[in-house]
Image 1 (cartoon, rainbow, N blue to C red):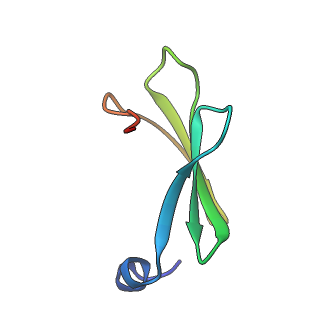
Image 2: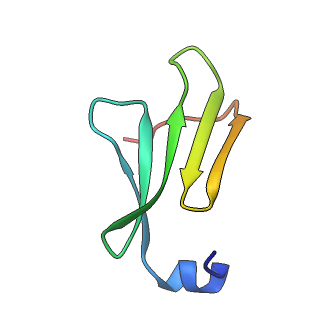
Length: 65
């Protein structure tokens, strides 16, 4: 896993996945992780990276336009 200090200087960018309920995390153009909302009505989310996957809940998952 990369240190948090290099994450800030490394240009991490979240982008919405077209036609899906999720986001991709990119670093220098390479996809390094994703965040998917399990369903429209659920607060359940799944995060994935090369280091594993995690499930959780968030009452504050929202999109900014």
